[in-house]
Image (cartoon, rainbow, N blue to C red):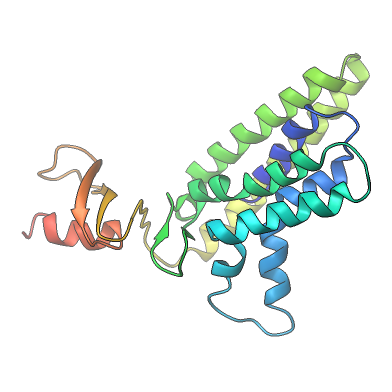
Length: 219
């Protein structure tokens, strides 16, 4: 998820007015900062396990919350929560590691930019609505929140346009686990299966595309 993380920060801000929005927003993007730092000065593959796996996100959230708590200001729990919420948000739009580098799980909506835009725009609207309900009691302030929400939606639109231009691989959503696993199988044509997507248990399948090759019309 891209701009949607900022909307999560707005929603959490409504829980604690004394918590500044800047550190909260930085925390909501926390795993991305960690991965970016690990790729400096040279790009390296496989860094997601150290930034976006469940153990890495939990450790990062605890560290961020503890660091903020040293300033003796309220909101350390929300800083940690914002960091933790990064993982389920990314689960919707990408594919991230659980504990090891494989398997990667997620709905992979980055490969469907229009769907990604609708999802992240919805998150932005909800985040802005919660923020406005808590802080924007005057018309002037509501207009500011509306303008902020519109700017975030436009920014997300730009991201999704870029994704649609750069897209060079198939949509491969996966809810995989080692061994027997819950797998999201998708068949765009809906041939023989009677539906576009089915949830089912399958044996050691690492991607929806791999499973479909075994169960598709040629089987």
